[in-house]
Length: 199
Image (cartoon, rainbow, N blue to C red; front, side, top):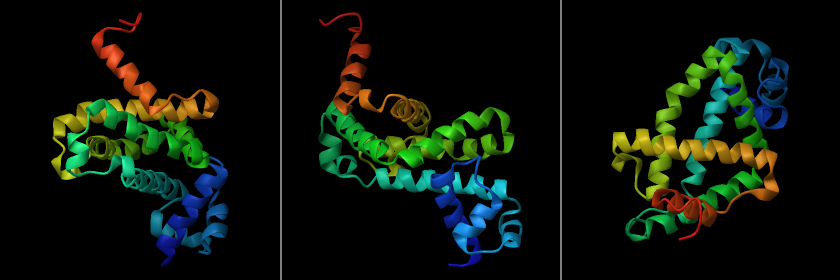
């Protein structure tokens, strides 16, 4: 790897170990083996490098979620009962959330910084639609190329809202997390108008 790649890998490590806001340029240099001047040369600033690190980490996490067996594509995934598939994929995602707490903590930290950091907000906003498209593909068991843009916008936003909420909940009450089946049951009850009591 060159210095640019080394710096990004170092920044991603710091993101998990120290968090977004607490990572310094010297931390990144120590983690990457690069020199301080190379941050400015390759990324312009430490903040720009950290923005790239959070986006790259999120993309890598999303790509790894897409590879879990429950999210597999093909005819079997497409023919499965939608609520069963919904529950199975959420179970796989929830397992990742439970076992990757440093990543989740970094994601939640960044959410809190968005109102006061326009550059970070813009960087995250640029990749958000792609993230929604990827989530639709994972939950529907299809390639990204088969996702309708309107479905990516509407349904992708729904999945992103659930994912974000579950990430926050996992840090607050990790022992009270819902299962994939709980989420599927909730969705069925909401859409059937059965929220106030079993019918």
